[in-house]
Length: 437
Image 1 (cartoon, rainbow, N blue to C red):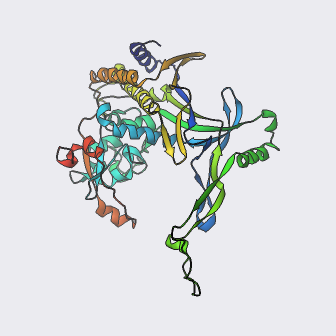
Image 2 (cartoon, helix red, strand yellow; image 1 turned 90 degrees about the vertical axis):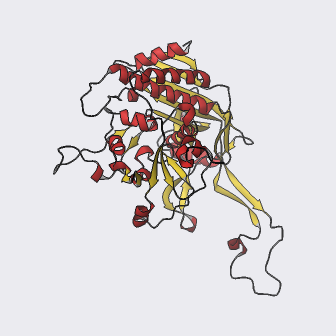
Image 3 (spheres, rainbow, N blue to C red; image 1 turned 135 degrees about the vertical axis):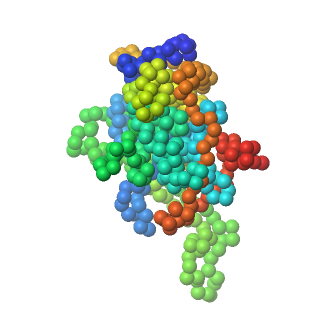
């Protein structure tokens, strides 16, 4: 695939209702930036109580088939939902550059803003449910009702207000039933709110050790995997000294409260074998953009059926989402450093990310996932969609959190952070039209 125009025309053909292409696969090999090949994978709750009544943390090990390696024991370094959050962070931080819509909930006196790119359930999140637009509950407002009416056959409202929901999936599980009224539904069951599947997903896995398939029989396999987990886990060490060498005064009764409970005293040299680092052979970044999911989306101008579907308009919307997804991946992988967590800073191992266009069985074409080229592709797609009046909403839609209602429903206290400067750039209304100093 030699040029942006060629890729653009291919996307238009393959995202049509008659298209059959699978999509795009992106892969890159990574290495830990910290010393050696010991990395800190994320931990997940097992639901079992451990020390101190806390739930026992665990890592997600799994046996996977790895290209050129065969069967291998792997450890999850970054999950699909976590990667979605990282890509949505790019969307939020580059709202102006990407020309994206912003629906924001103002929280507290600091004017902190929660956008559809921050909220856990995206545009369907409870923060929007408990917010008001011009004094009216958001989901009961005309815009909120339009968003709740969206589904795969009427994806236009989500395109206008929350394209990240179309890319990374969503479900209005927190929408209030009282605002989901359908004409003629009185006394009858109403339909469930549509679920939107992910059209793009990414993950990062670490390859711990290759596994000869003959050793993975039902009897010995589990024992071998358990032994490998222990073998390739390096215990985490800790040790700090107290500059005052605090201890109980001689000849006096020691305090009833331990020094450690006061935050004083030495931290004795210890090894935590059950929560250490994992040594890996290599780390793989993998992402897919699924054309089959995008081909399910339709973008009619309205939900009433007065205006018929237009195939060209539907294709234009799908191409915008596809090019936006590719641009986000290009931006993310061109950073040079992927910071996941403490002791999990990753750097590219073999240069640029590799993108494969899967046109059909056995038909794979490589192309460069260059941020400049992907931005050009994205701009072309947006310009074409505008011909069909399919655009992102330009002005930030500012909502107010109904803290009074929240206080009536929960005893939790929310700590509101100070608003960072970028918030005033993506939603100027917070500062009366100009960014704050």
